[in-house]
Image (cartoon, rainbow, N blue to C red; front, side, top):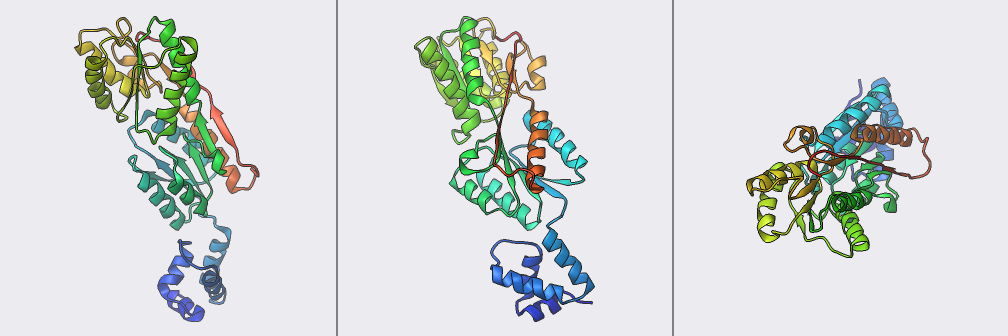
Length: 329
């Protein structure tokens, strides 16, 4: 029965090169790949099965890359996308990039080595290196959360500029006039830059004022708490606070309470995401709800359509949002 040694001997390459061709890895010349595949076809029944797999590219595997496992958005998105992928008879391979840009690129390459049929990427940034990795991927990639449509990358995004605009409107209507923003890393165009841009646009065009500040930190309650402690000292006139996520906002409200002020009365606070904690914290957090589970389903279906060549034109889908009013604003 033929094995790697026989295929390597017949094709005139090393066993490691044969293995790389079988695993569809990067860096193998097309001419070398053709020689190996021809040798596989000549090596009997077992090798013919491998050849058929190489030709069909049907592993029934979908790679999913997320930035962190603790996120409410991630958990709900995974629930949604996995249901669609399961219905299609395929299986999820999950990777956690831990908000490391280099790991996103590394996992795209690893998933290609595993010969996944497609990749769903919850991206936290979009730079030239990531675009290059996506373009070089043999498997189609759908971006979630960042807009890659200018680079012909299928994308599903949230209407983050409109959320920021609506946040400014809600804070002004609630009586705030000195409003600040707590965001995240500036490389996160959607969560940090777009949400701030929307807020600034509303304040500048409706009240001819600018936000007091644009602070940046992490996606955590602790980060929101530590930032707000200092911001309250730097900006004692603060009476309105828009936070890029609910968890940042919950930390901010803890700091406000410790400063002997009351969220919702002395300082209006808004978050984004409708995290479960937003309902049970005191005071309860006013926020914006994104349908993360539905977004996961739409992303999975978009990818499946690309795999089956049902979608000829690169598309961008913009998801809407819902305002949730509670005690903090």
